[in-house]
Image (cartoon, rainbow, N blue to C red):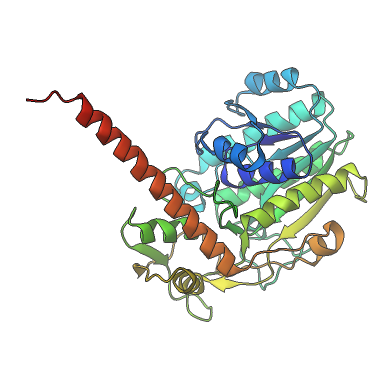
Length: 355
């Protein structure tokens, strides 16, 4: 199985789950938004050293070369994409170029090399600002609130059209807000640059890596004025990708392209998530209410009955588990950073001649 974006947050957890369930995996990730060191964490968990091709999927010839070198690829899980809502609002062209061109190149190779199974990392952003929640897979897709959402909506449409005249079978997984870290605490979310998502913003503020964190908006029509989202543990999300592949390989799908929501079915406000984090980790978070952020949807959470009944996917982790593992991972990152700093200072001090 080829996992694009395999060094990323969800990609790395999915690789672990695939290996656990007997699949052989290779990765493509140019590490522009990820750290290749995550592969060491994967190896510690699984005992398997996964090969990563440091390739920009927007460059067709380089992408094509990976397929030529690996003619036995039987399935693709396509994660590789820029994913920050705020950044996409600021730089929409970059998001359209990267997210759409990379998908097109992977699909071209998928068709040319006869790869039969394709799983796409989609998003609840395709629903736009829904009239009500929970949303089902049949909820009408409204205009997305951000260019990032447009790239996911367009990506789904491109896949549906591209596979109509070939033998590719596809699953589109619309997941909500993946958070937390692998229970081993060997891999987790480690964004490059300022965190764009809520939970890394919480943990980085709590550890002292950043100052106070901002809660974007307090005047939304919700129970406490902050946005509502459906938070789902990343390991639960990862397992759904394995189940989606199993589903296609066993020929259980009735159509050549099927869609599934991946969420817990519970909507939590930003302030409720903060309070849960404080409670389970016995911390007091430094946060301030700020203005609304462009591109944010007011409220969205999933109806996940289709994934449960068809894929047999049952989320195993609750919000407290998510907040606990996220904090444990942040503390591990801090410990590793302190260790590197200590080693560096030791080298510097030993190289200074005595007077």
